[in-house]
Image (cartoon, rainbow, N blue to C red; front, side, top):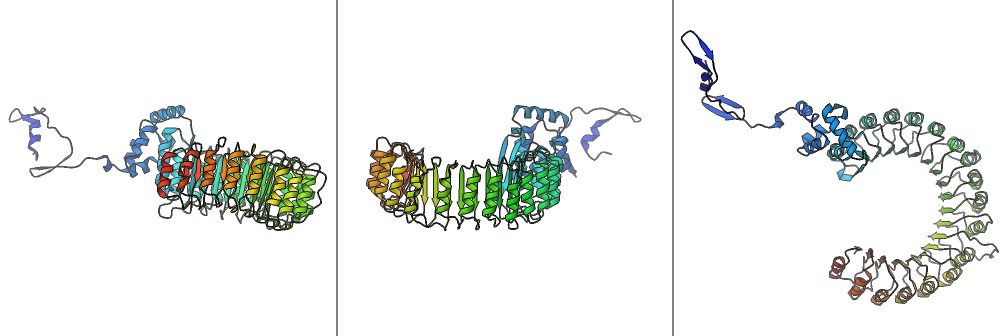
Length: 618
């Protein structure tokens, strides 16, 4: 009757007619399942891994708190992936109560995580989703790069959606394996989203934006770049449902047209403060809408708008809606002419910063009219504006009502170094002058700038081969306020004479000096700097002609307290400078000795060991 002899002891015979059930005298001890085969017992390995995913899911959702789930996630990849699929509403009530207490003890949603390149995988996103729950919750997530082999997919985004409902900022760049499915899951679960940045995500469409619009009413910042399937429908939903939008950036999306701009501006006219439009198929209609509805805009950037004409800028300026505009940047817009820029100036009375790049039809007349109409302008940047010359610049500087504090000129090829009649008025507000790679800017222009702007403190003259000591010395003598920061890198015709004169006149105020590429600067300049410059903390003499003697002069200075020293490419500096560099290094936080072939590897090693508080580039 019984195949197992042990089981026969369960029944004891009391007679030939009756049998009574009774317990055996000693219960057999069984630690694991047994399989009986003949007279041999085979012991099977016992492990929780034999349970199917459904059972493990039920166990995991009943774990007592976030910390316990995080610990289980570290056991295996399978457990991690299972835990990342559990939504917050699927956690058992008792466990959810403990998780809520843990959240109260932490700052909910304060953590930030960034994944780039090969680190951007689904496994890492799953680990973030499970692990951050026990540490206060994830608030900001940035995923950049395209891992072709094991890149981020919809699974990773779904894990973040389920495990990080406190997410407020999401940035996704260059991810080819995600689609609407993952982003819709984020929108459905993360209702606190405030900032969304999508760049080069070709797999998403208007469905994602509609989901965000319907589920994330607190959205304040939206940036979309190179998403070829995004069109009017999705952005119109954003404009209609997200009434708290403060910042919108749209770049290189060919399906976006004028209707989108009209909807966004009219819906968020009282909250939108920052707007950036680049490489879009919009026309003058959009600029007219901006000029009328942009009543709260303070920062506006327009780039590569090929279909916008002079009329569009003219209407925008006459719309009288940009009264609060403070920062305006216009790049590669052929419609910005003299008439257009004058209208913009009149329509933006509170404009503080104006940047114009690669606008070929802007000339001196338009620049002067703009400066005359915009009396609040404090900062002006002109780059690759070839019709602008010194005449327009200096006419603007001597305007009676000017408040200009900073002027930057880059790659303006229209400059010609001509002699100008010195006007009687002066520009006492300009503090910063930067002229970069303008080959026509020479001694005459520099001397006139010094005479017109006696309050200059920050001077940057880079790549100007026509400037010599004869042009720079008058500038030194005219600066009454005292030069604080001077950058003359790449001015190959400046010599020790200029440096010594500047150290003598402005040594009590000079804090930063850049002589990179000034090949005629020698040890004489270092001696003058060491004795005259009391406040200097940044010095760059890369690619100059200084030697070990110049370094020793700096080391012997009593008042000099350098924080940053760059000697890159100084071929005449050798190991003899080692004791002097160690002495100077007592105050240094940055030292650049790259391409100093006279300094041996052993000396570099000693510097690294001794100057432990200094970042050394070698």
